[in-house]
Amino acid sequence: MDISKESALSLSRILQSLDLSGLSKTQKNVFVQRLDEHFPSLFQHYYDVYGWQYDFFYHLQSLVQVLFEGFAARPRSLKSKDMARIDNPHWHKKESMLGIACYVDLFGGDLKALKKRIPYFKSMGINYVHLMPLFKAPEGDSDGGYAVSDYRSVNPSLGDIDDLKNLAAAFNKEDINLVLDFVFNHTSDEHQWALKAKSGSTEHQAYYWMFDSKDIPNRYENHLREIFPQVRRGNFSFEPSTQKWVWTTFNNFQWDLNYSNPSVFNAITGEMLFLANIGCDALRLDALAFIWKEMGTSCENQPKAHTLIQAFNRCLQIVSPAVVFKSEAIVHPDEVVKYIDKEECQLSYNPLLMALIWNSLATRKTRLITASMKKTGTISNDCSWVNYVRCHDDIGWTFDDQVAEELGINGEDHRRFLNQFYTGRFAGSFANGVPFGENPSTGDCRVCGSLASLCGLERAQAENDSAAVELAEKRILLVHSIILSIGGLPLLYAGDDFALINDYGYQQDTAKQHDARWVHRIDVSNDMLERSPNPQITDLLKRLIQIRQSNAVFGDANTHFLDAPNEHCFAYLRDNGVQKCLCIVNFSEHTVHIHSDYFTQLEQSIALDLVSGSTLDLKQTMILDSYQFTWLKVS
Ligand code: GLC
Ligand code: GLC
Image (cartoon, rainbow, N blue to C red):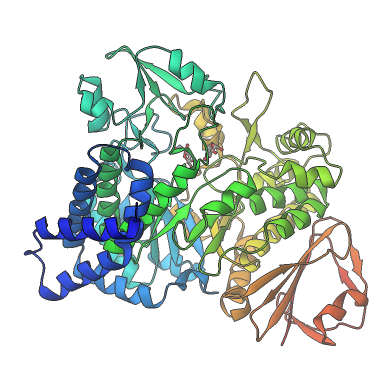
């Protein structure tokens, strides 16, 4: 079949039957032009997944209708932004970019209160705000909002949709990018589609994966991971009203959507465009690795998951090209990078860097981070990593076992060590983490805890040990220095800017006590914004941010991962063609010496250390104090 011929034919037939009369002449032209540009590719992807179905054309036509409705509903101000962003697609690569992720209820209380915190964002240099899921969700446990009951209503305790639109407009005015979650792998079991499925609608049962017996689920189950084994074994839950088994990868109230059904793709596209039209700049694709199920596989990272995301991306290009996708794939590093492409996800969390920063802090060694970063290499120039150290989730040790093996490290044993270390069970550990998702069958687990607690501040303060407090503070700055300088968009996690330690209050809350991730989901009060509980850390962090934001070499520039000068240091070179900056991080509490030979690669005799502000003679040995890092700029 000649795909381009069929695509052109389908588009002309669809356009004939589409009523565009509601659009102005200019808008009509824009829409048709965008279809001309992106429909062939959308057609190809949609055909790859759904082409075998007898009613393919019907669904294709309905999809274009959904796109048209999204385009017609898109506010004019956002349409201007679309134009501007088409001309400036690399906005996320600027050195000025700095993100934060926060929960609305834990960061002000509600959407109106959060708006009042704009001056705080400005004072920190923050211009990208990821609001954790804020949509209607079940009462009690809703997996922190990741079980959405209605994509078009805000959780009433946080405000309403107008408050959200207001906030988006206020952010936009202040050049703050808004990031919202697109939780599209599953809905809550209280979403109207799920309610209809429960009440017997076969049409809506086909939106999910529902089985009459456990026979087929068991066949899938042989190849699946368990994500939350601490609350429920397996990936299927029994649904009493229909007497069926439902696919629930996460909690039993999170029902996986069935993307082999084109009606699901079309319906969720409508919801996605609604979110885009609120005025967000990025959509975080939650749990995107899980969206395609294929018998006999792990049902993660399947080729068709990529095809579907590329199809969603084309829908955005047609309706709301100002909006980019951010990938949340916390999987094997080789799989993480496959989602990163201008035509798939322009942004992606960098879980490998995150995990290996923690690894180096525990081991004081950098060979694994260096080898791993070298192996991953660079991503497409059109895309950016979102670099983070902590987020709302647990830490999973997703490094590549083969890279570890080549260094003589056994992946499984090493993960066990890291879990022991960060849960404080390893003698000499500085960390106060909490185990999460312990799997009784495999003994595997992941780690929770606030950045400051994992860096040793909680223990040091409890023991009133001022030397240990100082080391913890240095670790906190060190880890932030990496995400601020390594290339990509740095993403802070709310509360880490104040070095908040674990909050164990969740253990008293029946809706939360089974989920240790709440230990690091901490309320950030107004008092803290006015006066940081750890002012020295906040001030030093702010200074680093200012240095990043005033040096172009931290923006759109290449990153070369270098052989380290010694086993405790991690080194990389930023280079934008005009300036270079050599960043070296000492991951140990000991002083290290770096021989001047190491600096010959800079081909300069002096450099400016952006961190201390002093000029350095590169012909001399350099001394890095415990946990010290340096940003050596040469031009
Ligand atoms: C993502 C979220 C996590 C949630 C899961 C299910 O991984 O980050 O918090 O539990 O998806 O939606
Ligand atoms: C798993 C998933 C990830 C999710 C996390 C939640 O690691 O791969 O997507 O965020 O579980 O705990």
